[in-house]
Structure formats: C-alpha cells, structure tokens
Length: 427
Image (tube, rainbow, N blue to C red; front, side, top):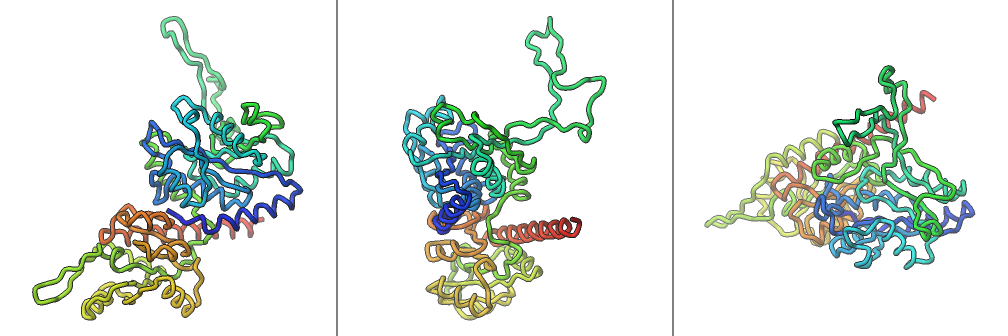
C-alpha cells in the first residue's frame, strides 16, 4: 500500500495557498465513506484492485488534486482505518448509529459535519470510483470557489433507450419513454442523457445540515465515460481492473522516466530460502518468468540491480549475476544509503527509480521510489508502504509481474505524451 502520507502535509499546505489565491478561505474537505460491512463484496473498500487497495485509488487522487484542506475516510473498521492512514488520509471513526445496513450516506456525512465544525464544504467521494482523476476534482471545485455554487456533482453521458416498465403483462403494453421507435436515433446523432455516476458530490455545510447534497445553486461536472467506473459486485472486478490499468490515475511521478529497477534478491527474485548441501554448497531457486521480466525491462532501457542484505557464496552470486545478466550488490545493510549512493553515481532522481522490496528495511525506499512494489507474501509493514502489491509471491513471478506493470505504465505515459504532441501540433 502506498505511502502517500509523506506528501500529504505538503499537498494540503499547497491547497491552502491556492485557496487564498482565489479569495475563498473556506475549509474544503474530501470525505470518503468506507463502511466495513459491505454485503456485495466483503471488505470491498480495501480489496486489491490492480495492485492497489480500492480506496487507495481515490485517496491518491484527492491528495494529488491539491484542492482539499483535509482528506478523510469515514469508517467503522480497524483494517480500513489502517489502510486509509497508510495512504495519507485522516480517519473519522463513525458511530454505530450511522454504521448499520439501513444507514444512508447522508447520515454519515451529517455526523462528520457536526463533529468537524471548521469544515465549510464537503466533497463526498465514492470509494468505488477507482478511475477518478485529480484534474476532475480541480475543475469541479472551481464551481464552488469561483462560480459561487452551493453544490456540484459528477455525471456521465449515457445513451439508454428507455421503456416503460410493465408490471401487469396481461393488461398493459410497454411504451417508449425517450425515443420514437419509428425514428430510432443513431448514437452519433443523439447527445444522450446526463446521468449521475456517484463519483463525487460537493456540498456546502449549510446544505448538508439541511439533509441535502444537491441544492441551492447547483452545477454538474461531466466526467469522461472511461473515467466513470463503479464496482458493486464481484463480476465488476475483473472489468474494473482492466479499465483502471488503462484509464486510472497512477500518481504524479511519470513512469516513462524509470531508468533503474532495484530488486531484493532474497524475498524478491527468490522466495528467500537457501538450500545447503551436505558438502556445504548453497543453492537458491529462481523462476524463469522472473528472468524473462528482467530481460523485458533491459530491452526497454531499464537497468536492473539486485540487492542482498546477507552475504551468499561468491560462486553462487557470480552464477546468479551471469544467469540474470545483472549486477548483484551484497552486504547491503542500509538499503536507503546504498540506493542514494547509486542514484548519485548515476545522476538519477527518485522518480526515475523503481524498487521491489519485501520487508521493514525497504520501507523508506518503497516510499520514495517513483514506482514501488512488494510480493504478495511480504509482511504487512512492507505492504503499507508500497505503491503496488503483486498478485504473485516472491520467487514465483513477482518480479515478472512488477516488470510488466512498469512497462505498461511507461507505454501508457508515452501514448499520452504522443497524444499531447498531436493535440499541440493540431491546434
């Protein structure tokens, strides 16, 4: 889980300065509701989606938007609280009265507002909208700060052909509600309809106190269809994962600039076990998929270096280095110090570094690296500080998976850069 908390104070400070720039000093808070008792998918809000806890996607977007004085998660569950704090959010522990199956979102928002009287505007962000982008939040909040709106909510343009529901099939025929069957509209000839997608709702404190999220001077914000992703049931999950990988927001660092992958040898490339024969020879097991992943990165110009805290036999280290075609650094007791030395020598910044760690000594590097990951079986302390959690275990394809993730993000970023170049040249 990502260590977004390291930048949250700076982001909030920047947001305050921007708020003053618009002569609007109201405290604007983001509030993400994440009850632990989801019926459709148990603990859905922290289930891993494309290597990130579901709630992590929207916390990251909210923090990186820079428009909120504070970002909160409202929950009644200890594990959700732990994940929320790891990603940089503050936590509102909701009361049992607003944590039941019959409690409405508005009940919880009103409780939050009552307990935080200094908050003037609340943006309720839906935890199940993983394709939310900071730019959408930036544009939407301007409707509050610059245009004087009391409420702003997200919509998406859809093209449903709606018919009247038939409840008594014997005596009633259906009727069209928004079309003429004799002249069925083509999609390209019809503007469609604006439908709430539930991604976010901005509302002033005064509206919330009246039991409203929409009212006063209202305005909608139209999101791109590809950013409008919602997850309610298990069948949505694999589809949402593919959408997020293609259209999700992955943070401020540009993945196309990654030039170096640093990877733990034990607990990363291998499963951490060392086999010792009767005559004292050491052996380790590597996965050919991981070897292929390293080869894929090298073909794309990404250098790979393996790190090992405990020394292994020189003959074994030399054999591994030759087999993987990459350098192995042994006796690395202080990971952060060694990585900083490498970066200085190679003239690299953290955003140019990817890091695959697996335990507490890797925490600082996991936090600072532009892209970071841990194997599925890494301890919780490492999970809490990584930006990507592999589906595979150490020594069983985790390196290959992270390599594919790096290359996918690089490809996506380069595609966006090319699109931006075309747009600039066209206009």
